[in-house]
Image (cartoon, rainbow, N blue to C red; front, side, top):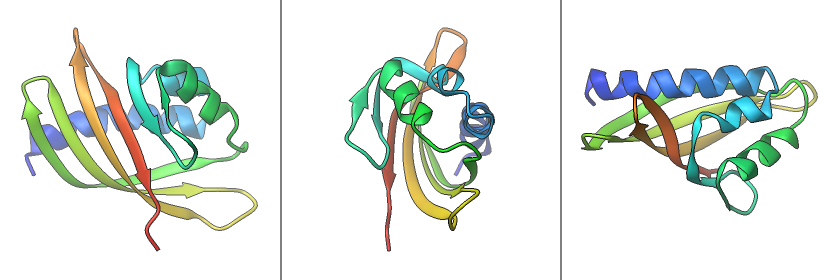
Length: 121
């Protein structure tokens, strides 16, 4: 795993985490591309509106903590990430999931273009 690729992921995912922790769905959505494919633990959506709606429906107090397991540069403007994410709740146990993301450079910013959660037992 390249440290430069991992740093690109951290930059994007730290913004995502900050917005999730603050329960700011529109700010979460702003970390995604306009045409992002998003697969949480519900049916998939395409675009920022679906991302915002998904996070607006999450309970207050939801937090996210992540560890990058793998990072790969797919092209100059694409980085693939595989992560473990722990979603914390105020009223139930932590949910640990695996997350695959592809981040894409759009102008001078890196944004999430693909997001897919897997819950492995």
